[in-house]
Length: 590
Ligand SMILES: Nc1ncnc2c1ncn2[C@@H]1O[C@H](COP(=O)(O)OP(=O)(O)OP(=O)(O)O)[C@@H](O)[C@H]1O
Image (cartoon, rainbow, N blue to C red; front, side, top):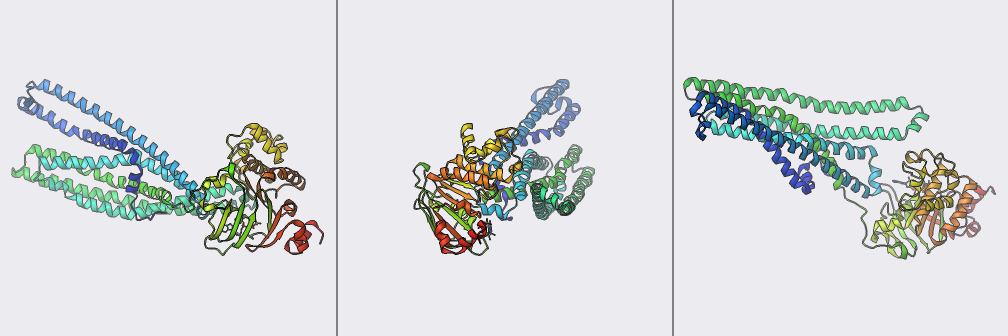
C-alpha cells in the first residue's frame, strides 16, 4: 500500500484528469454562486444610498434621476442577482454531484479490476472485510466529499478572498483589525488538522476491522451456532465495535474542541473592529458610512472560518479514504502477463515441471527440486500424504503463485512467458473446495462458458453424473444454489464443478480431489464419463482414494514436497513402497 505520508490529493486529481472540464465548470459555478451570495450587503448599501442621496446617488450617476425609477432599477438588479445565484447554485450542485457519481463509479470499477488482477497471495494476506470496506465505505466517503465538501471548501476561499479584497479596497486603514485573528485561526486550523488526520486514519482502519469481523461471522454462522459460540462472538463484536467507538471518540474530542476556540478568535476581530473603528469615527478619522459597512461585513469575513474546521474535517476524512483507495490501486501486480499467446486450438497439451522449488511467503520449501513430465493426452495421478504439496503443485501450473526456482512448461514454453488468460483458459480446474456463485444451477455450470446453450449445459451435467439430482431440484436447472452453493450437498457441488470444467472443454484438466465427497457408486459412474472426457486431454488427477487414479498412465507418489515413487498401479504395487502400503490399507488387504 502507498505510504501514509504521501498526500493523496494530487493522486486523486491525476486520476480525475478526464473530468478536467467538468471540474473547472463546477469550480466556476461554485465561485459565481458565492460571489452572488455576497451581493445583498452591496444592494442594501445602494438602496440606502438611493433613499438618502436621491438625485446624487450612485444610480443617478448613470442618468436615472427619479428616485422611484432608481428603486425600480435596483429591484430589477436584485431579481437578476437572485435569479443568477439560483441558476449557478443549480449548475454547481448538478456538476459536483454528477462528478461525484462518475468518479465514484470509475474508481469502484477500476479498484475492483485492479484487485481482481492481484495475485492470490495478496488476498490471503488481507481479510475480505478490509477489502470490502475500501471498495464500499471509502469510495462512498469520497462521493460524500465531492457532493458537499468540495463546494464548501471553494465557497470558503471565495468568500474570504472577495470580502478581504473589498475590505482592503474600501477601508485599507482599518482592514488589519478585522484580519488580525486570521493568521491565528489558520495556524490553529492546520495544527488541529495535522493532529486530527492520524485519528481519522485509525477510525477508517477500525471500521475495516469491524466489517471484516461481521463478514467472517456471517459466513461462519453455522459453525458459530454448532459451537454455541453466540455469546463469545457477541462479545468479540462488542469489543471491536467499542474500540471503533473509542477511536471515533478520540477524533471527536479534538474535532469539537476546535469550534469554541475559533469563535473566541472571531469575537476578537469583531470587537477590535467595533471598538477601534468606533474610536476613529469619534476622532473624525473614519466616516460613519464606512464604519457601518465595516462592522456589517467583518462578520462575512470571519464567520466562514467557523466552518473551516468542519470543512477540513470532511476533507481529512475524504483524504484518509482516498489514501486507502489509491494505496490499493498502487499495489503492484506481482504476477504479470507474459508476452506469448497460447491458442487453444493449437496447444499440444504437454506439461512439464522442471526442477521446481517453491515456498509460500515466509514458510519453508513446500516443493523441492521436483520434476515431472506429462506427455500430451496422458492422465497422471498424484497421491501422497495430506499437506505434501499436491494442490500447491497444480496451483503453480495455474500460476496462482510464482515458483522460486525451476520452470513449468506447457508445450515447451515457460508459463511465465504466456499470457495469463491464455494459460488459464486452457486449463480446467476442479478444486478441492468447490466454490459456487449465488445463482442458478445452470448459471454455475455455464460459469466461464457464458455462451453455452441449455443443451450443452445438460450434456455436461449428464457426463458429470449431475443431471439426475438436478432434475429432482424444485426448479431443476433454474434452482438457486445459495451463496457458495450452500443449498446443495458437498457431493452435488462437486458434480456441478465437474460439469463446469467439462463444459469449458479445456486441453488440460486438473481434478483435485474432485470426487472426494461423492459415494463410491457415483464415483464409479463419474470415472466412466471421465475416461471418455479425458481421452483427448492431458489430465492431472489428485486423490486420496486410490481407486480414483488407479488407471492413470502414471501415478506419482508425493512425500514432503518430492516425488518418492512413480509408475503404473501394478508397478507401484510390485515396488512394495508407500503406494503399496496405502493400497493395502484402502483395499483392506493388509
Ligand atoms: N496459501 C498458503 N499459504 C501458506 N501455506 C500454504 C498455503 N496453502 C497451503 N499451504 C501449506 O502448504 C503445504 C502443502 O499444502 P497443499 O494444499 O499443497 O497440500 P496437499 O498435498 O494438497 O494436501 P491435502 O491432501 O490435505 O489436500 C501445507 O503444509 C499447507 O499448510
